[in-house]
Length: 291
Image 1 (cartoon, rainbow, N blue to C red):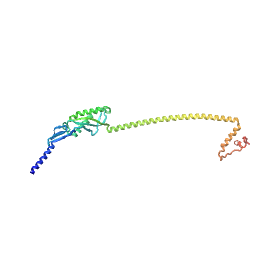
Image 2: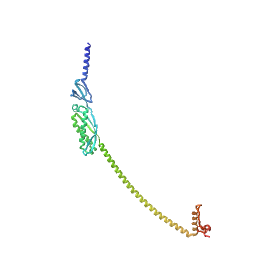
Image 3: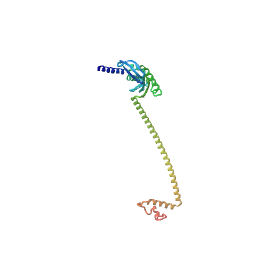
Image 4: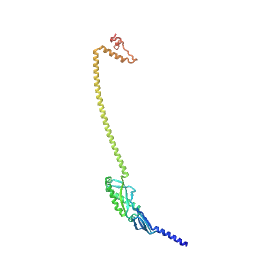
C-alpha cells in the first residue's frame, strides 16, 4: 500500500512538473520563438499564455521595444576634401522579424556587433562623399537621413528596422586639433606682435609730434618773454631817464639809499673803502657833497 502511495505521489509530481514545463507566458513587451533542439518551430508575437512540449522544446525571448545603440569607439572618417574627423554615432533599432533575427544574428549581442559594423561602414561611405562645410551646415539632417536609409536596406535582411541614426559628435582627431590650436596660437601671437609694433610706431610719432609742439611753444614763449622783457627794460630806462631829468640830486640820493640798503643788510659785512669815496658821499653831507 505504501509503495502504491509513493508511486502515486511521484507520478503526480512528475506530471505537475511536466504540466508546468508545458506552458510559458509572453509579456507584451516581448516576442518569442519556440525552439526544438535549437531549431525554430514557431513564432509567438502576441502576449499571453502559450503551450510547448516539455523537455524537448525551449523558448527564446526578444524585445519588441525600441533599443538603443551607442558606438563604443570613435571612427576616423576621411572626407572628400581630405579632412579627417572623429565621428561618434547613436542609433535606435527594433526587432521586427524575430525568426529572421534569430537565424541571422541569434541574439542582441550579435545584433549590436553587426549593427555597429554596418553603421560605421555606412557613415564612412556617406561622409566620404562630402566636404567639411556640408557637415557643419544645415544639410546635416539630410546626411543622417541618408545614413539611416542606407543602413535600413541592410538590416532588413537581419530582421531589424532602424528607427534613426544620429551623429553625436564630429571633431578633428587629437593630433589635428593640436596642430590647429598651435597654428591659431602662432597666428594670434604674430598679430599681437604686429599690433605692438604698430602701437610703438604710433606712440613714437605722437611723442615726436608732442616734442615738436613743445619746442615750438617754448620758442614762441621765449620770444614773447624776450619781447616783453625788452619792452619792460626800455620802459624802465625811460622812467629812470625821466626821473633823473626831473631831479638829478634826488635821483642820486634815492639810488644811494638803495645801494646802502642792499650793502649793509648783513651785520657782518665789512667794506674797506676810502672815506672820501663817492659811495659815502651822503654819509658826511645830506646833499652828497664830499669833504
